[in-house]
Amino acid sequence: MKKLVIFDLDGTLAESKSPIDAEMQVLLQKLLGIMKVAVISGGDWPQFKKQLLSEFAINNNFNNLFLLPTCGTKFYEYNNGWSKLYSEDFSTTEKAKIVHSLDEAAATIDLKIVKKWGDVVEDRGSQITFSALGQDAPLEIKKQWDSSFTQRKKIKAILDNLIPEFTIRLGGTTSIDITKLGIDKAYGIIKLQDILGIALNEMVFIGDALFPGGNDYPVKELGVTSIKVSNPEETKKIIKTIIAIA
Image (cartoon, one colour):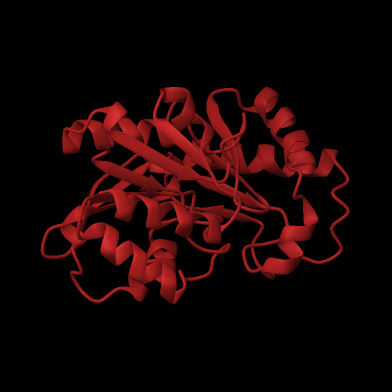
């Protein structure tokens, strides 16, 4: 019997940068009533509040919920309010080098982008995120742009040479996440193991980017039972199964 279910957020619990829907909220509420749940995503803390927490009643079994924004480079737990346990932040020099390298990589490849919505590069403190179409691009347009990850894989290949001292992963629908070397979702999972005292074989992870280079892939490499989904509807079916057999 698994003791901890870990979810990715965008593309797994919710559509990109959108709140979880009513059915997902009810399912997660039921799941939190019977076991521990963690959510680990490339999004930052404000995104977690908007997409996830805003849909729940206050303190709705939050003691069983653990949140790891920016690919596990931050960790939040609930104790009469949400508190941050750690944040693996970049230095000013590191941020500048990453942003410069992103500009160079994007300029090297013709991404054929006519319009951008909002900032392309976002400083999330412990993670720099590149969103090719901008942070506020419409979901349907984002889904059409690089569904095969072809463009982002080209950018990643350039970045791997320019900044090998950092970890670079593909995530979301148009994004690339950059963190400190060795600090990725696997790092967050190890933190969950240490803090909660739950072994890796007692965990199950559900995510949509479990391919090599995807920001969920380090969890699979770690040996955690991992289930790939393509959208939140598939995730709902898995949650229903977990609840039924728990």
